[in-house]
Length: 193
Image 1: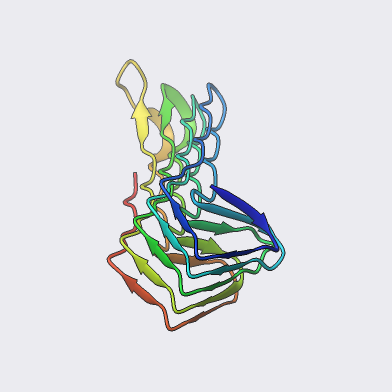
Image 2: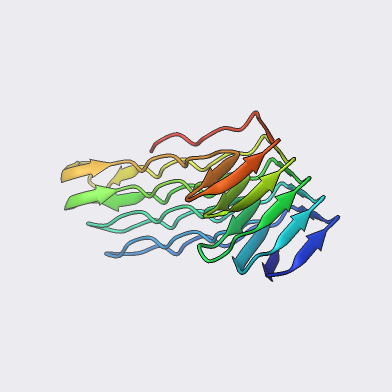
C-alpha cells in the first residue's frame, strides 16, 4: 500500500494490498473499515501516471452490538484521495479493486438497529482532482451489512434495516472532479443488506 502527499508516482504496479477491518462493538457502533486499499493520498496535489492498480481491497466495517449500527466499509479500493487532496491521475488502469462491506448489526431488543453501508469508489474515491485517459475495469463496491436477530431469534426492534451497498463501483467523486477520456466497464455496485 502506498501513502503519499504531494508526490509523483509513475510507472508502478500496485497490486494485492489491503487495509484493516473496523473493530466490533458490544453496545457500541462497529468501526469503519480502512480507506485506500492500494493507495491513500492524504493531502496536497499528488501525481499518479502510467500505473496499474489492481486487486486491492479497502477494509470491511466492523459489526455493531445491541442497539447500535454496523460500521461502514472502507472507501477507495484502488485509490482514496482525502478531502484536502486534489490528485492528477493519467494513463492508469484500475482493475478488480473493491471497497469494504458494511458491518452487521446484531440485536436482541432495541430501537434503532442499522447495518453499515458498503464503501464507495471501488476503483477510485476522490473529492476533487483530474482523471484522464484511465481505464476502470471490474471494480466493485461492498455490500451493506445486515441486521441479525439475537440468540432468541425474535425481532423486537422498533426500527431496523440493512445498510446500503456502496456507490460508484468504478469511480466515486464527492465534489467537482474533471474526468476526461476514461473508460469505465464491468464495474459493479454492492447490494443492500
